[in-house]
Amino acid sequence: MSTGIVVVGAQWGDEGKGKVVDHLATDAAVVVRYQGGANAGHTLVVGGQKTVLHLVPSGILHPGKCCAIGAGCVVDPHELATELASLRAAGVAVEPDRMWISLRAQLVLPPHQRLDKAREAAAGAKRLGTTGRGIGPAYEDAVGRRGVRMVDLLDPDRLRSRVEGVLRERNLVLEGLGAEPFTTDEVLAPLLEIAEELGPFITDVGHRLDAHLRAGDIVLFEGAQGSLLDVSHGTYPFVTSSATVAGSASVGAGVGPGAVGRVVGITKAYATRVGAGPFPTELNDETGERLRRVGAEFGATTGRPRRCGWFDAVALRYAARINGLTEIALTKLDVLSGLETLQIAVGYKADGVDLESFPAVDLEQVEPVFETVEGWSEPIEGARVRDALPEAARAYVRRLEELVGVPVSMVSVGPGREAIIPWSSETYQSRHKSYSSK
Ligand code: GDP
Image (cartoon, rainbow, N blue to C red; front, side, top):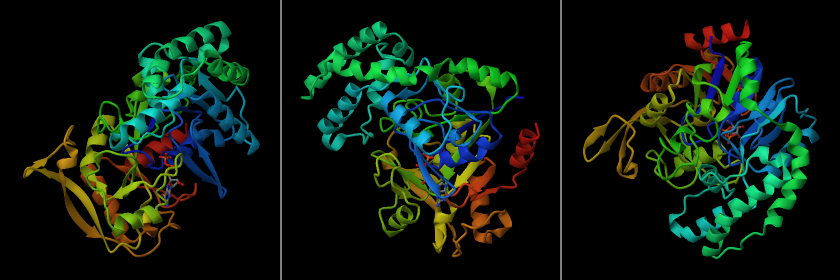
């Protein structure tokens, strides 16, 4: 049996992947990040203490689990070192036997960050709304075959020559945008310092994962951002610079696609989006404001307010298809308590035509077709079993399940680790049992 489980955001990111990974990590041996950089922010609340992780998989908070950063990631080595240090300060064991950084992961360097910011500033109203952390430019250099990789940190001469290669190209662009160029030593010196610290963690992640998969251990593949931000399948050009969909787990971690047996799509019970780009069900009114306030919809990395709207079943059906979702984890159902009625986008109208699929272009032009359903007034954060939820909340989950066509396997009703209801959709229960009794 394939014991790999991919956890992927089914919307525009910030769906609460961190919490679901944390929940599933109980049964896993390894948690691996397969794409993205430190623009992903996972917020976890364990024992009332809040931890924000940007690069290190949230599994690190489980003693004895191994965590990995795969080849498909881009890593700011200084940020990573800071994150490891703060975890250590919080009493978490961070040792090379359980924290692995891929030899092949690409580095995010200061010129990438400066370039990211200079471009966004120059773009004015046309800016993408990036986090300004240099993720996009680092991926460009990776594909441009001039990137600096983790393995280069282990050889000072090679490191110098790789940094020179990046600067040859990037300094031209920086100057063109009116930004300061870098000298080689400015970039190199801090890297040489950090190399000592990170060196022991740098390893062949694919090889290590393979050993666990062969032994029948559960490996969790933790995605960052969301499916609709995928560079190929998302709302292009308002997307992130990596492949975020489930298929990317195999590529980014360095194992074959046959390793994956379950694909868990995380979605909120409503929708949010950070930054620019189409968002058909966006609410620019009091209800949107309320979702933002009650759901604390502000970016974990940047603090930016998120745009909020109703659940979009068209978008979710699309996400289910491109990811091959086998189940859905529904989060933040508690945020909807107290709304008299709820709306669900069940289709789109464009030029009077109903669109079945999520369109590749002109999403700004579409008008969602909404279905109105009953809300519930009770707070539900304390519910731990399905029957403790008001009937309207259960009916809402059932309706989403029906519209998307994928079984819901768990419902999250609060930020805490324990605020999760295993949904009795048979798929989840039988699978979960067979995994944990292994
Ligand atoms: P991620 O990047 O997908 O992990 O998402 P974030 O961590 O940015 O956002 C999730 C936020 O929602 C965090 O602050 C969580 O503590 C919180 N959260 C997760 N699940 C729930 C839930 O079911 N209800 C509520 N109210 N908050 C939740």
